[in-house]
Image 1 (cartoon, helix red, strand yellow):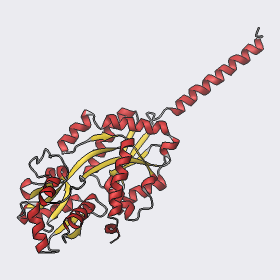
Image 2 (cartoon, helix red, strand yellow):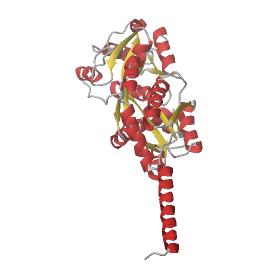
Image 3 (tube, one colour):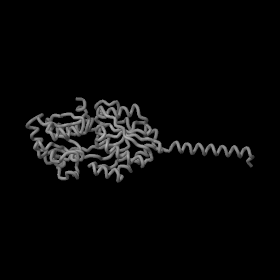
Image 4 (cartoon, helix red, strand yellow):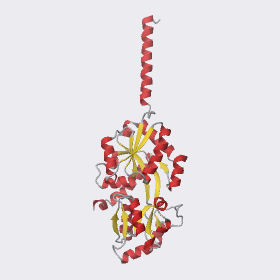
Amino acid sequence: MLNKKNLLLTTFTILVLLTTFFSNALCNEWPTEETEITMVIPFGAGGSTDDIGRKMMEVLGPNIGAKTRVENRLGGATIIANETHLRMDPADGTYMVMSNFANLFGSILLGGDYTLDSFDYLGLFEFQPYGLFVGSITGFETLPELIEYAREHPGELTYSYTAGSLTQVASELLFSEIFGVEITPIPYDGGGERRASLIAGDTTISITGISGTLNAVDEKDVRLLANMTNSPHPLDPDAPLINDILKEMGYEPMAEIANRKGPWIKKPFKEEYPERFESLVKAFAEVVPSSEVQEHAERMGYELSWIGPDKAIDIIKEEFELYEKYKNIFEE
């Protein structure tokens, strides 16, 4: 039988163990209502990345049970956002970067002090199919017509691009690699400037997001000569698909060109906090298809569907290989 002293000792021991258990459980609960999760956007307020990022964080907060905010860190073709994230932000899930993967790839090849393996990727979402646009002022009606003119007038036509962007790689791939024509590249800081130059006739061509362009300009001012994917776009379902055009012209098909975005967090987040990693993945998997985000996306002309981390990393690595193939254009 337990004497009074032993009984008190046993009771005290049980209380200590229970207190430790519940304290650890509370400490491991993440996030709490006091946790603040920040999404770093490498672009200015008002752009498409900032817009959809803010909507996602607005919905993410109640979903995961935490405070959320967006912080814009501009400059260096997204290098500043990624490098400051690596140097300054904790790797505990309270900070993440969200941007175009195309810009991440370009920033690595432009000399950012990081690699593709510097980050853990929560996933990606399909965003904007790209199209080849010309200003209506140019008079070009079809892509074959434009390419024929480019062959006869080397260097006269121009295309706009943003350094380190998908536009730069897609233009190099299509014009130099596939068609073998000389079209002069003209750099701009962002999509808004590139669209304005197209309408004014300052540049001839821009390969850019279909939704973003057709929602931002009067459709009479631009002409979509080619949808750069294999599926018709609802805003211009009659636009010819690039691989149909290439087949008719006697060329091999090319990879689809679409702008994908997603969130990433510096390593070793996933390794040190696997439960937090899964919590964020689960939250985004619920937030992206939510009615609030999808209705906002439809109003803005975005196309969103979530792809989880396992499949996403394969897509990310495959697309980065394409960028590495054309890394010389980032060194010029």
